[in-house]
Amino acid sequence: MSLRVRLLIATGVAVLCGLIVVDVITFSVVTRSLVQQVDDTLQRAHAPIEQVARSRDTDDRQAIPAIAPGLFVSIVDVDGTELMTAPAIEPGREQDVVDISTIDLSKRAQTVSAIDGDAIRLRIDRLGDGTTLVVGQSLHRVDETRRQLVAVLLFGSLAAIAAAVALAWWLVGAGLRPLRRVEASAAAITDSDLDLRVPGADQPTEVGNLAAALNEMLDRLQLSSDEREQTLSELRASESRMRRFVADASHELRTPIAATAAYAELFEQGARDHPADLDRAMSGIRRETSRMAGLVDDLLLLARLDEHRPLADESVDLTELVFAAIDAAKTVDPARPIRVRIHDVVSVRGDAGRLRQVVDNLLANVRAHTPLDTAFEVELSTDADAAVLTVTDAGPGVAPADLDHLFDRFYRVDDARARSTGGSGLGLAIVDAIIRAHNGSITARNVEPHGLALIVRLPFDPPDPEEVP
Image (tube, rainbow, N blue to C red; front, side, top):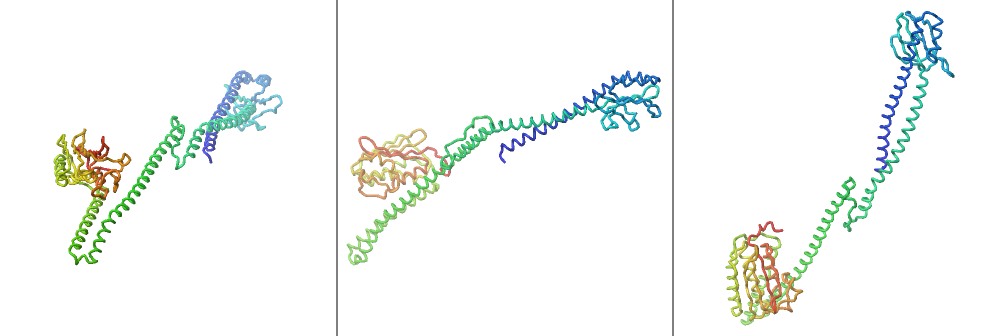
């Protein structure tokens, strides 16, 4: 059963109950008023009838029907004998006579049935001589009026119910029209299209509240859908990176493994019996094994950083750490020009070993990808609430399209930068992972007229690493 039908039934029942109460009250009030009119008539007729009834003259009493036309009059003696009875006579009707022996003469006003069955209203008064005067009037007109009243109330109630139901049908239809619009809009919304919104949410009505609630639910669904799509996109991107990472790692490991196998085969083919060949094979095996060990160490470090494993949390003198890394770089490459600019003594909180690895990798990146005589500059300064470490070289730089990929794992810019020693392509990726683990950031930009600048920002007082998302 639809809501509209239920509302109409409820309206009809409510109107019917109300009309029943009103009709009962109206019928009772009108009936009481009609009977009161009859009592008033009997009271007005009582005085002249009583005056005649007091007379002992029979002829005078015979004049009572003329004095009270249409009224029933009876005079009863003390012992209950009827001294005189005058029936109620109305044109076109039978006479109304009451059997005095069946009524209670001690009750002043009462309604009884006449001998012919019609109801008659009586007024009973005891006179001073001991007789009792009974005056009555037929209630057939009252009964007719009540029957007419019942018919009027019945048809009027039916008409009122019909009008109320028709009005309720229109009002309910008008009231449910916004709800139908809400239903149509909700039906038009699909899982793939959550941009639609239900109209009428700004209306201060129940339908407006429903529309607002539906729109709020749709907002949450839209947010959840966006988050799900973002998560799926991130998962797909992560899976793609993982596949590429595994492929690149396999490729990087294949070369030293193949070289090690070749040296081992050389050993098996007789290098053991020739000192020069033996030394060459052992040296090659050690070199390739060292290369594989370094690559595996880098991969393990990246895996730990990806798992957000906690780093050491201590105060680190970044200025001292930078000077130490520069001294080591000069030892490795003493001929390369290095310019150092330290503006402030800077301390940060973090893992000193990992931060030293960051500086070492940045300097090693310059050595690995620029010509031997290329100068570079190391600058340490502060900016607002962060320490800023900038390593700038005067090398060939990189193509603008490659800047965003410098920190990707196994990414190399072979065409843009010289590669004298090769490398795994993990150095800057490790730097980026360590900096992010310290709640910092690293960016790259080309400098004029040529060269590359790597800028590291580290907060002075980073939050707890466990709170890092």
